[in-house]
Length: 107
Image 1 (spheres, rainbow, N blue to C red):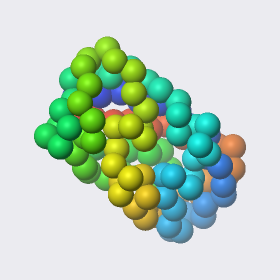
Image 2: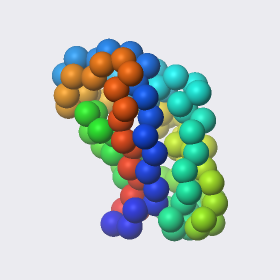
Image 3: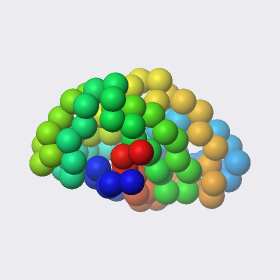
């Protein structure tokens, strides 16, 4: 797997280990707009990606946009709405204000 990029986002709420959460509720809209630089090209609906969120876990999907290496993007422009709104179980306790790394890699 090649790393596509990473960003650190601040949790907007408390989540206990084992509880379900979603990316679009775990992070405030201001956090959702934080950008990062793509380290590889991505092609919409073709590039398989793995999204790993610290203290939560990971999921696999396909890129929702086409962008070139070196371009700026956000998790929310790279992922489909269904991805950011899917239920994910927290692997550890999360406190509001925790800084969580989000890493995106190719599959």
